[in-house]
Length: 113
Image (cartoon, rainbow, N blue to C red; front, side, top):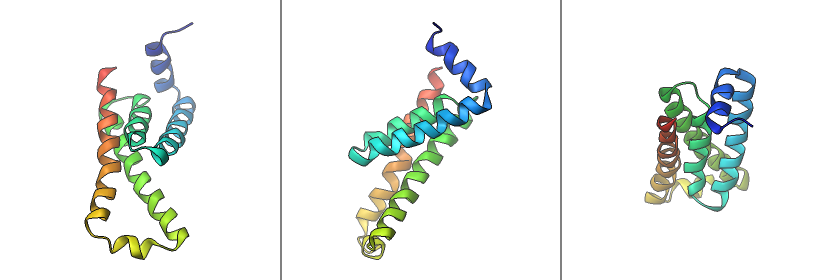
């Protein structure tokens, strides 16, 4: 059985495996974030770990955070309350900053390996 480092190296080298891992990380991160904000950190970490460079890992983490914000906005729009949400002032600012910030924090794990 190969080590985690070997698995990560193999996944980074194979585009198909990397894309599947990113998709799984997005789904897992969004599902976890649905119940707790640490899901943003976990999702950012997962999508960054399979990136070939630290820079791309950070960008992938940031992209995950921004995707989380967009997903939340789409969900609010489908519920018909996006306008009310946008009128809430500081709540909007906090809820738009936390997902990218948490995901970016999680993506720093890419620098470890």
